[in-house]
Length: 392
Image 1 (cartoon, rainbow, N blue to C red):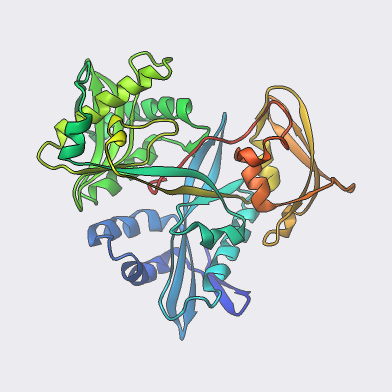
Image 2 (image 1 turned 90 degrees about the vertical axis):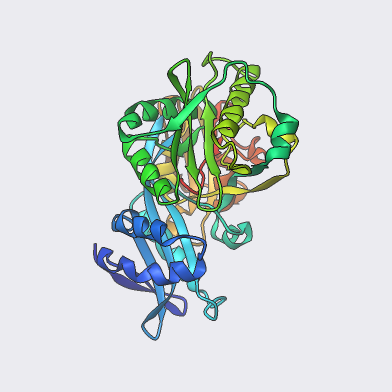
């Protein structure tokens, strides 16, 4: 991979070669001081060897950076490649100069050339990314369980779960279980492959945690990711009901068992901070705890025609759609989109189609925003729910 410079507005946005990626470590440390040296050691020895990093400079010094981390994602019944935008940073004194715009526009153009259907990020602020065509597709709750909350919400679990930290030999079984759970709760997520779980396990160990496994009657039934740098913190706590096809009360019972197991495992270490809930699930203690909610994932369609190919419908349906994308003009035009149960396709047509939709509006529409539900033909399956966390 060769480095390059591309002039955007007043700045050259530069994509570093892999051998130069370590030059961005100092700006990461300054902008994200909460990340430990152990975490950064792991990141730059692993993820940064295969990602792409964009920067701008002032007097040859790097003053802003943006990382694109690659993932395999599941989109309904299909899989695709997508990049997670992380560590977007501009040093104080160089902000409000268009540097982030230069890097982000370059990244989007390169992803378009790769024909990636969409990209995603976890925003510090939604307002930063809305002008670039991003749509908030998922929010996540943050719940802190302390001793008072645990006592107020405690309810004896009908069948207590046993939990232990995962070892590498557990990952094939965990991969299969995680894929089953997520397939029941969401439409779009990162693929829980063995390599993905190895990456998470290594990253969480750098945060003094790991992957915690839950067992019911000696059978693996759930998991979560843990870190203990600043006290116990939990991501993606998920347990299957005893009856996998159960709805409602079955998942509620499973979540009671999960919460009880977590509190017993971390006895003497409360409070526990829990986040990254699966769509449609809650812990029983949330009624007694202070709950925060923040954007978990903003998404943006990159290559419109590639995105449409991933969509499905219950029967054949057709939509004429006029699109305006100010950053990726290759997406502009009026399209005839044909949806089928096997896949979908879009061709550019010359005729007008009525209202013109911005790429942000099209992204919101195809990711299931209720505001545009009447635009999609009946039977077309939107890409929702979406489930991404900062672990991606």
